[in-house]
Length: 86
Image (tube, rainbow, N blue to C red; front, side, top):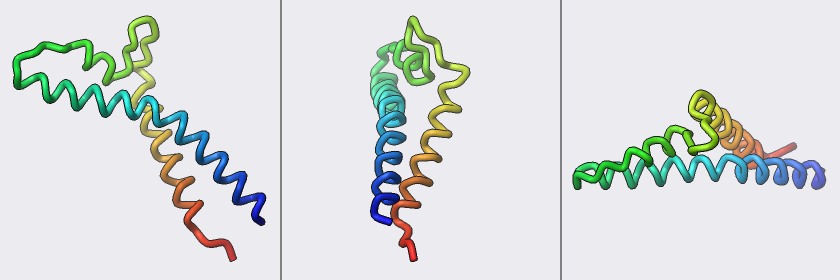
């Protein structure tokens, strides 16, 4: 039983590690852009980062879908870790 819980934790850690980087990029770029916009600074490149356009790699068509699915999976796996097994 303990081994199963350890495996669940390992899977949860991997999922959250994979989804944490794009979530952090989205949060930071959106926050910085919203701070700079009232100051009159045109930082359109931040919007490109925010939506998944990383220059060489353009993930815009799939980026929001990936963020949504990764977030949902992370939340579900985290909730499952909190549940008590009989």
